[in-house]
Amino acid sequence: MPVKLAEIRPQQDLDNLGIVALKKYVNEINKSYRALLQHEVIICPMCGNPESKKMFYINYNFPIFDNLYPICKSCCCKMAENRKKDSDPPNETVESVMQVLHMMNRPFIYSVYMNFCTGIDAPKTRNDTTPFRSYMRTVGSLPQYQRLTWKDSVFD
Image (tube, rainbow, N blue to C red; front, side, top):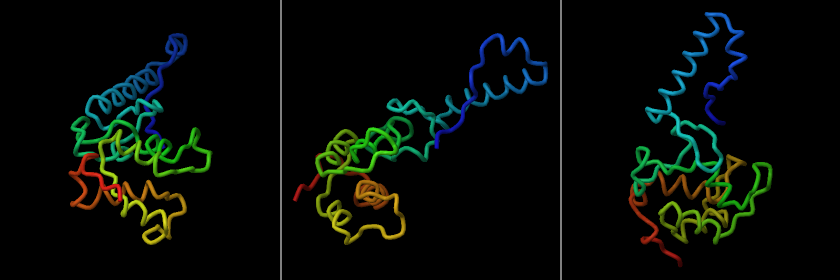
C-alpha cells in the first residue's frame, strides 16, 4: 500500500481555510517533503506511488537509494509475473523472471528458482506468493547470494 503524502490543494481551497487548518496543512506538506528528502519515502518511477523503503528490494549491486532497487516490489513482481494490472492472474515464465533479474543485476540460479516452481520449496502458508517472490526472498536473505550479480547466474 502506498505511503500517503500530503495532497496539493488548489488556491481557492486554501483561501477558504482558517488559520488552524492552514497551519495543519502546511505541517503535512512539510512532513511529506522531509520524508522525501531523507529517503524515508521513495517514489517508484514505474507506478508513481510513494512507498516506504521496505517496499523496495535490497540490491547491493545497485548503490543508489541506500542499496535499494529504485522500482518497487509490486512493479518488479508485475513484470516477472506478466501482469498488466494488479487484478490480472500471474503468468510467470522463466524468461520473464530472467528479464527482471537481468534488469536488476541479480543472479538467476536455475536450481533455486525451479525448486520454487516445482513445489519442492514452494511456500505452503502464503497464497499470494509466486515462485519469483519466493526466489527474491531467498536470494535477498541468504548471504551466499546477496553480493552476486547477473554475471554469476547459473542457467542449468
